[in-house]
Image 1 (cartoon, rainbow, N blue to C red):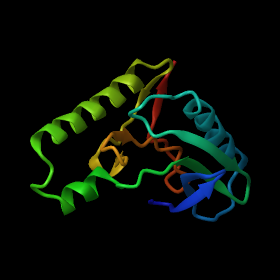
Image 2: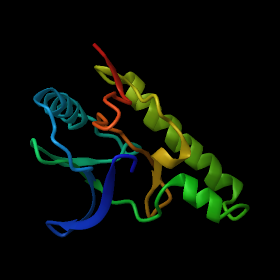
Image 3: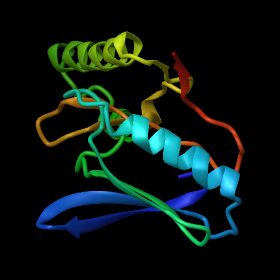
Length: 149
């Protein structure tokens, strides 16, 4: 990721992805913003949204834990499999993305992603596409999500 490292880990017997943000001293404001977005992310549950599993927020470390999707990003998949994905699979992938985005736009509070692109879409072992929810980015001091109340 842009300002951290993503690790494949095992957590209580489940494969997970743990993004550890680059080490720096986090201000109280940054930690509070991170925690607010985590509390909203915990409420998002949909088959086409990456499953949020937990977070660590302290002055020394910010980390999020999500489900691990073994096929990786749609971007990498498309780059390595040009012409190998049949039209039906491509249509199903597009439908998955639309369903995930519709869920975000229909949620209360409404979520606008603001960074939808193939590197931010992950594919699971069954070829289901899931939208990555990006949290507050401490290195850029802005949120890639917009929440409307």
